[in-house]
Image (cartoon, rainbow, N blue to C red; front, side, top):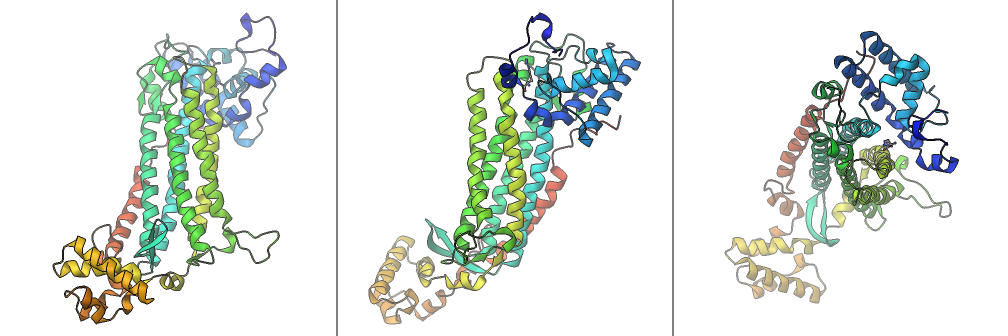
Length: 473
Ligand code: ARG
């Protein structure tokens, strides 16, 4: 078995060392990026006068065939294929012979792998943005149906003030919108080409790096070859964004787990997104949401793995960096599965408006009572205090706040009048909060329009496709 780097070695590495060193088991997923990168690099070598036209067309033809083999699932990994880069080069030699040995001129696996992972990440970012948009559109669809659906809003998980279910839905929409924005931002720093940095010191063969960047769909080239081969910031950033998406989904999931409990009964999951118990026949569990909540743990863990990996590395490439890929792939795979599940569960979610309404308690209008006094000229602090006394009085009598008599109110403050009765109307309370960003149906309709615009805009601002498929020359 001939190794790419075998020249100075008199013995093969031990089987154990090979197993330890090989990354082909996971980095095989970079095949498409690796071949795209090699095709572009072969052309750059030709432009620099290092390959004849015949040679470059032979290499490109071979690389396209390998691409087809991967695409059709017929590529076979052989012993000695350490990683995807060596596997492709080995196969290229089998297909086109000795000229394959020219492809690596001036290139190192250090700038190659950094390029491949960036290409891979750019594709993944586009996919994640689309999947996030699916969850958002499910939230938006629910919001459109429930602009007037009243429910208790909670702080500290205690009934606080009435809100609309649409408002709750959209609160999660905007968190995901920020995540998409973070992905876009991430793409901007990922679309910087390391190729041409060589092992660490730069390429000596006058490779036209800017043209190479354009050919591969990168927006810029790296400024420093040492930095280019060691920089994995883009992975850390992408993993942070994945972790934060996980945290956002986990919070959404937690709300829905609570809302789906019998005690709340606000929502019911479709059978397609729930599971049963092997013991208790009556159970219908919100597993989709629990797993969503649970998977946020590994998304956070993957970020910590990569940050820990990077900390303390000496300048330029170190083999530790090979360990950047499993956490990256895991986070992407986790979200590829989680996001569509969340979107599906949301789309099919049944909303029990009567249960939501029944959970409203007149005490949640205490703030509205205080505001009533404010409108009569009472300073808010005093109004708050007086209303607090009314709440205490009602509690002492064992009645609802709305059941106090006019005399009771009057004894507390002469500012109370018969019209205090109008305050005890949940819909009115909600409608009053019609400031921009408020929960009033009027404001929420505006918010829905903003959300629709954000979703439309997105499709135009998605990070650019990295490069044409290798078949197009
Ligand atoms: N499999 C390696 C990785 O994923 C490729 C780079 C190897 N570079 C080297 N100098 N051994 O990082």
